[in-house]
Image (cartoon, rainbow over all chains, first blue to last red):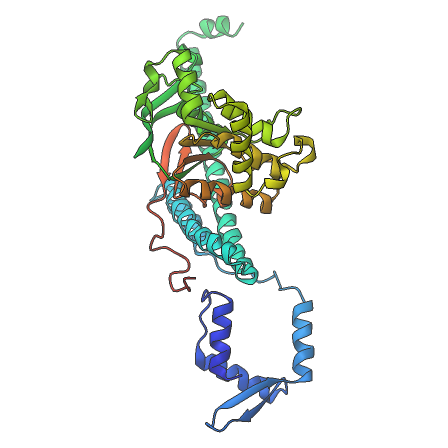
Length: 187
Length: 240
């Protein structure tokens, strides 16, 4: 297969979600050729046609057998945005959460529409791809639900603390004015 | 054509310091063939909104119009009639009658509409067929899977061409893939002109709708705009 053919094949299989840089494809193929994972022949047009080798096949099998590492946490802009929205105190954090939720659900609606079409055409590999996007968006939305619930609980707790402080304050003042009255009311 | 028009509806329970506002000044208009999902945490007012929409409960403020008719001025008999003619309900549990076959469960809804028993059975079988349940017609609910039972419940709810289908967590008891099948079914129902309002806290299922509304503490907290927004994840993706 040609380098360019590889690029288009990859993009078609993954629905153009991750477009490949064609230069990067050729650099990677050159490296694979150097390491003996692929072999190359030049065709009549002077283009290189690549073929997987036995060591390449072994390496591919290893790749399928190894789970994807979860140690590296990809940077999530939304998480960073929320952390700083809370710390800065300059913005309504609940509104930030709600705006993101609307955007996330809208994106999810779009993917779901593609899924309904894919279901009709019976393209299972493409459906798996779309499911991955669906569950990622769902995870974000559920995380936003959790953020909102935590913020709400914090507000309630803060409100209670404020009221308790007020009651305490009023009680102290009343005691100063008429200690006997406070004693009577607490009986 | 507007099927459902909820106009600044509110619902409060109790009075004085025990007064609880379940729904506060919520408006929602649903057209024929439209699929609307209502999302929100437990106690946010989703079920209350559906109960008002279907005439199972009356608002304490505002109006609810079903096919242009104001439900808030109807008595219990008038409400029951409006419900039977206009609205189909689907709940988390299919609630099929266990002593009747799947087809009979659907046929009974048609008979209540005044269809003669024989014609009702023919209609029921045709409807089950269209929902991919042709083979299940003669079986009893206990012989059906959860997903099949829920599809029969949907058939019963839309029997007689009721223009509005209200679904309250219809996929709650189903596994992920079966839940998707049920959502696909609701989606296709809209294509025949039926309006669907779905209450759910499952975001994946809500995403099957044309519009998603968010309720929080009985108030409308947001809404997704028209479909295929510029935020589409697959803007550059292939269109199949």
